[in-house]
Image (cartoon, rainbow, N blue to C red; front, top):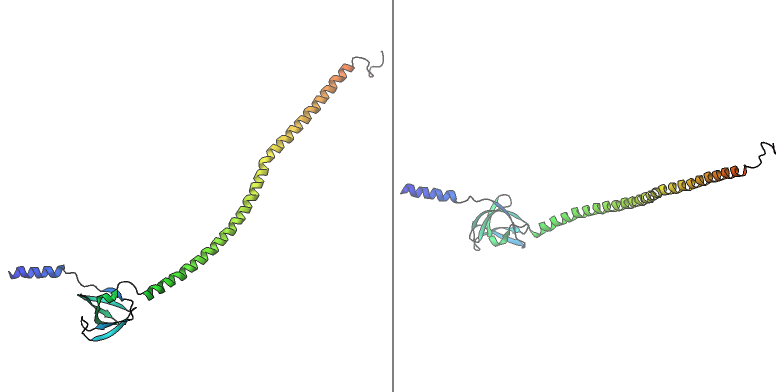
Length: 183
């Protein structure tokens, strides 16, 4: 029987989770009183401001035993503690983030301006290249027109020579100056 009872006690102790220190903060009030024992009627041993950091060591109904200020311990109502950072710290953190984001925005504005300037330069280059491309596309047609005109002129010259040559042969059946008259 003793052995059974001893085993039950050991099992119960083994199943109870060990108390772990958890970081918490005093809620956003002016000051809270730290007492020597859990209860409003016990002696006040210290005061904590709203941004003071404490370690929760033990819970007892509505009270929490805390560790604070370089190893001191005491009791405070649990409702006066919160796991959230105090507003002053959150505001300070947000202000730091705001400064960082402001710097990033300034850098992005500079980068945007330089990209806009580069875009204008690229647009100018694109317009110049497009105009040159159009001119080069029209150049083969101009060459073809020039060749066609030259070809027509050449055909006209050849036709004129052929017609002149044919006209001379028809007239040459009569008298010729080279052979003399009537000889």
